[in-house]
Picture (tube, rainbow, N blue to C red):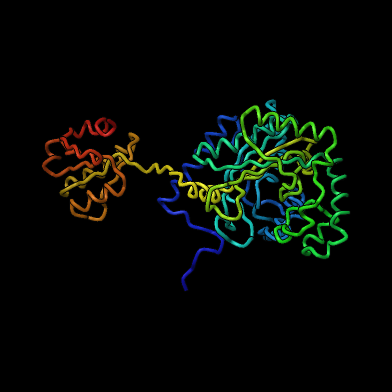
Amino acid sequence: MTIQIPRGTQDILPGEVEKWQWIEETAKKICQLYQYQEIRTPIFEQTELFQRGVGDTTDIVQKEMYSFQDRGGRDLTLRPEGTAAIVRSFTENKMFGLPNQPVKLYYLGPMFRYERPQSGRYRQFVQFGVEALGSMDPAIDAEVIALAMEFYRSLGLKRLKLVINSLGDRESRKAHRNALIQHFQPRINEFCSDCQERLEKNPLRILDCKKDRKHELMASAPSILDFLNDDSSTYFKQVQHYLNAMNIEFVVDPTLVRGLDYYNHTAFEIMSEAEGFGAITTLCGGGRYNGLVKEMGGPDTPGIGFALSIERLIQALEAEDVPMENNKQMNAYIIALGEKAKDYSVALLQNLRRDGLSVERDYMDRKLKAQFKAAERLGAQYAVIIGDDELSSGVATVKNLVTGEQKEMALENLKEGLLD
């Protein structure tokens, strides 16, 4: 029986993985510019963390988590998203007491959700996200949004649409919640079983339902913007003011609610408008979560962040025909002809690599012509030909595979010559 890769996962092979490395390095550079520091949390956490942090009415908790018991009978879950784990670490490690506030963090790693695999969506996927904890300044909301937009633009994406909304504070959400219940309750039996269950628990989640999104009551549902109190309204206007000051275009969409229970105030999504990208256009989502740290047992600390899928990003780059960098250029391919030259090439390769050069040689006992073809396939800038006669003379023939220029070079000066 042939063992195959699990459904909903993928192998990222040489030739493709370089795209990922380029994207990951870009993410790290952008975060450094904005002064966000990397944090790494465990791939599995206590199941209760996600039940409390993500929300027990969400699809993630109800349907998509990979949960199991370890040998000690503890309930554990492979992390389905990053924010809850970051907040747990922030609280557990008392980062709220650090002198530099807000605490600005980023993460990059695999997440796991049991959902139907489709184009750009996997059961194991890689997520890049940032979290800023400790500030209630609307400017930090705008900064987090700006970081996400700048990341996409620095990679070459142009067909982007930023959509924002406010979910209001607790008082505003309570008033909106009551209005939603009154709106949907008379005809709730026309909605799916999930929506019927959410009516009393979290009616805002009905607006995020994929099954019933075309129901006529969805279009006429009360808008959260009509229920914002003065403080929430002022906050949202200030976020928009800062985005305008940074010349970041956006659209206000009162139906944007996001899929996680912990959001309040600012919520946003970044979408691809590239032709042929697909029906699901969302690339990135985020928002503010002021009560989450307290829910995790820490002090009442505000926070805001976003998360995005690298798989979806690559799909968007391909839709816009953005060339993705491939940094596999190597300095030289060593072609050794004769037994003495082959013996010498083993040490030569090691010494050149220690000096910081990317070099390779033949291990398949191929003929000269085949070795030249191998050098070209590997993207070598130079081919270094060493035979037994050249070895005794202390020289090598060096051919520039880009220009075709060929010359002799002393072996003792090889490093300097290959770096020219």
